[in-house]
Image (cartoon, rainbow, N blue to C red; front, side):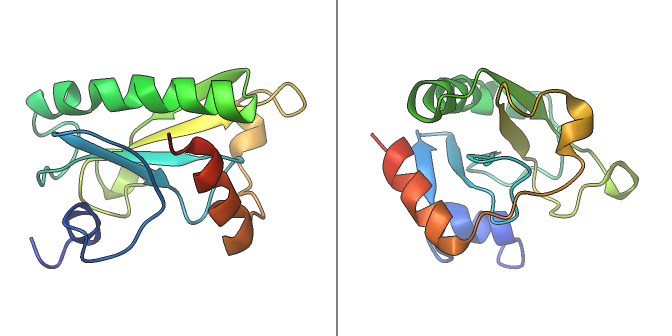
Length: 134
């Protein structure tokens, strides 16, 4: 789908700070992170949302686990939130199934701490991608 931002990222047409990829999934740093290392995981093929195609969950499962381990091992996260929004009213803004892997740290625990986005700059994201890419 040429009008889908995440399809364009998956095809390499739009650059992203990729931290994980395999045959069925791609993971890249979120450009407006809630926490340091906030990563978006997508299936390579276009799927509208996680409620529309149950097979898509299997396509991204290994990437979710891989990214979770990366942020814990490389960034010192002590936990992760894993979430996905399905539909506009749920907060989905890009209509290509995606999962947010949001690292959590001891000094900023709990769901309430996720209500404000991080102030990571582009330079911070460039440094993070270098830490996370194998």
